[in-house]
View (tube, rainbow, N blue to C red):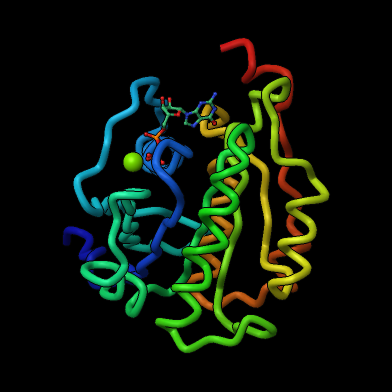
Amino acid sequence: MERTNSQLEKQLKIVIIGDAAVGKTCLLTQYLEKKFIKKYQKNNTADSKTGIVTVGHRNFNVQFWDTAGKEYRVDTIGPVYYKTADCAVFVFDMTNRESLQYIEEKYGEFLLYRNLSRDNPSFPIVLIGNKEDEKAKRSVPKEEVNEWLNQNDDPLYYEVSAKDEAVVKQVFDIIVKYANGTPKETLEAIPVLKQDSVCSLI
Ligand SMILES: Nc1nc2c(ncn2[C@@H]2O[C@H](COP(=O)(O)OP(=O)(O)O)[C@@H](O)[C@H]2O)c(=O)[nH]1
Ligand SMILES: [Mg+2]
């Protein structure tokens, strides 16, 4: 008998929100296909990437909505992704200060569409600071990020580089668990081991 995995896999939907060029597509490609894309390709509206991932002993069929930064209009297509998402991942680029301000704007829209309170959203929300390998170009200070986290009920936060396959896998596995209902406190206890130095030489 052949496996009938499609019946066993749990379906999850995760929306990735962030300005153009922060690295959303790269993070997803690294997680699902284990490769890093150097060239920047603009999205049309919002692309969907689906992959079967194994986290723990369980298979998940995860549909990621990879949104398209500034071209993306929340009042047209946004709500569809927003309304059905099991988890929202907000990505900014640590070398681009404006990309954190963009998150603030989109985060407000997301809360509004899902009817969530800022003080206690009770929804799986993750913030990712990407391009961690570009240390010298970092322009978003840790304090600024911490302030944002404090004002927004302290969501899960990770600093990653889309070039770092191992870290991307660890962080996105956590995101999948979170989307599947694992409590935040349990996930906070999982250490993410960074392969520092190596990635900036690639
Ligand atoms: N150095 C560095 N560059 C990255 C990283 N992630 C993405 N990039 C680059 O940033 C550009 C935009 O990435 P992309 O994933 O297309 O951005 P998106 O518009 O958010 O989907 C591309 O040229 C990528 O190669 C990263 O972690 N480090
Ligand atoms: Mg993209």
